[in-house]
Image (tube, rainbow, N blue to C red; front, side, top):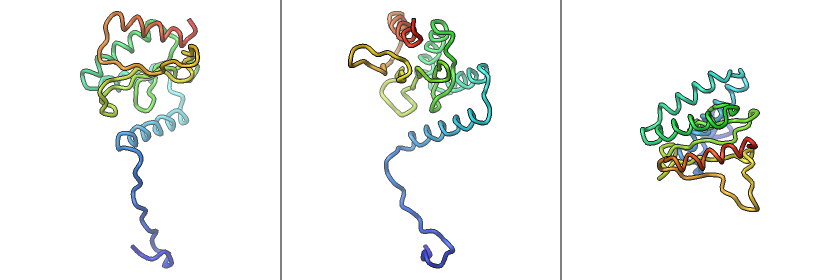
Length: 155
């Protein structure tokens, strides 16, 4: 390393701890998504194709859940726009993400989650859940999820 005073090089900073490699990759994906949104407003078909591509890339256990959630959300809330968010399948209302699926493989977690943003308006009392663990889906689970998604859109 050269001295600061000779003007030819800049001292190297040590790598700071904080974010994991997976978190950094997710942030880079989000930055790419924001650039894409600024460069062009992709039509709904292109955005859904990107969601389906992300789902297809998932390991089998995550993919099966994501495919069922995608179909369920499109069925109960067709006005929500599928799009990616931090590299994950997400669903937006008026441009704002209201719910998203995070596969267990995304951050090497024990279970997948269906999360809801603050735009989802799931408010109930002074405390309410905003993410739900999913290890598999059955008919009863799908009814619960359908009710939550409908609540996010005001039904």
